[in-house]
Length: 462
Image (cartoon, rainbow, N blue to C red):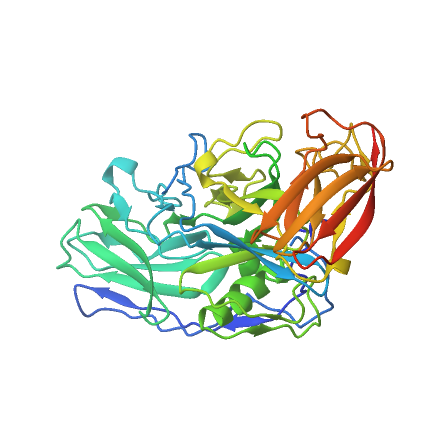
């Protein structure tokens, strides 16, 4: 989860360790076995200080960095929670995970290396399967015993590069039928990533090697904008499974480890996640947000009353070179995003309008922006609160009331009667003849049906 001024989850880590043993496979029965137990850590860390970070299927455009298809998450929804005490909003964005075997890739085996036999006499190796892992991995195969497949006993060991304790061994007996698919399992045969290998009749040289890459998309981007066409979308959350896995190792992110290995599993169990690091932005000390078994979420603490926001969630990847087990440099999303250009997947945008609930205390009523300055808004000038629609809003109004705006001389400029509506009322700064009002000071009156009323002042600067 990379840093951003947008705000978000700020945690520097919770250690997550997973222990695994090696696997052994023999085909079609009997032969040598390899049993070398070991362990590996997905993410390691100690709790540290709170920090501030940012916090239907569509297919990626051609030209993804590694031919991995990227699919948009489904079930994307957004909703808002208003906090009366602080007069602020927390917006939540939820989406479903991309299922296994969608948007994954098991590569064809690389060519045999370190062999002395002519290539046209070597056993041809093939791979197949639907990858069931959550990060990119490379499986390195090494021939431990040479021979002719289908005639001799051939032994091939394998291990996942950078996770060497995830390993195993295949023994192809003389009775092995060339072309038979062999499942590749790890951790004493209990861990199955969905990879299968077959060997054609041919020579296997001792200590010769080949590798197979297994890939999944890297993670999710959460986007936000205030233009309905998505032309101003910006990332408010980047959630990387790869960086979560690496944890505090080079290229890792402890924040992502906490998110994927602690926050999400806790919420999916229907339990609130309690922060051990104190308050988290506008949320406080806990997430009490029950998730379905395949759901993810992110949140936005920087939503302003009266604005309409547009959210999108994309999957992203930056490519993977299986021979070096290295990530690429450029992130590619399932849907192209370019500032100033309409979002290519408009159906994936989720609209959310910020509006307070009506309330009965007239002394909580106010108008915003005040003063109103024409010629600028938050789209163009950072210190302007003006709404993109160039309107002002009366906020915290009662459910039933009458709003009137007068000149300082007492002439009625505008009137609005509310009955059971929300706590916001917009005025487009025009008079009863639909003419734009001029610069000056205006008096507004908000009156309840029982006659109670409150007055206020609004300044317009053209």
